[in-house]
Image 1 (cartoon, rainbow, N blue to C red):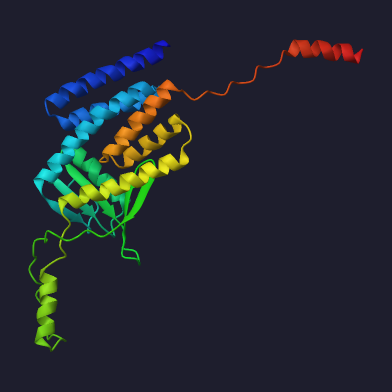
Image 2: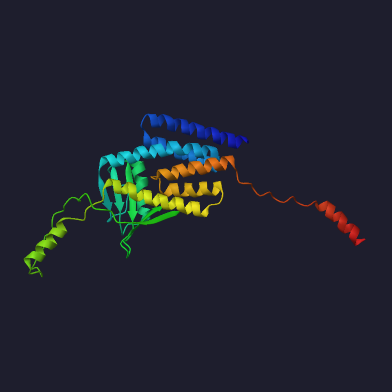
Length: 276
């Protein structure tokens, strides 16, 4: 093993020691950050054994964050603005809806990590003609799945009805009352458990993509890692990455050898003889 590789391995081990201590101290954001630093170093030197070992502590950090988000019991929608540093987030679940897109969901998650606020994010796209809603997650690759719309269980806070000026075009009092009620009561929000279910469906779709396309353990590990960066809340993606990386460490993919260059002097001599 080269000095560079040995130095990289030692750095990974030091980062994971810090992550272990932070997990015990319940500093989940710091522990996750150190796990991710270690993971990037491990990928840089293709140390699949360490990649596999990092997965479980990383999964535990994210499980604790996810539990905190669910326990908060809050559900929010993001529709009318792009996430920015001026946005102060609260713990809970965020449904990102059109006209916002997958990139907004990724920015929102990164902003929550900066603020150390535990959240769960689901990004939905416009409903299909079959009544399904596409959900999406962005990273090195884009993951998509189509799922059933959320069952409304928690009504959103009512907003005051808008004041109108001038004469109304509606003369039917019953119709006017119904329109006012609809304007005052926004659509109900999905439950926090729905966010867990939605991300589970998205992650399962990501796993199927990798298992269908990848042929070697290294290819599976690369595929799972790319999708885990897009969808960090899926536990099975961590587990599949750990399994594939361990298999890659035990059964490395043979590397193609470069052809041995021909001895030019030898060919030169043969050419000289042939010319004679």
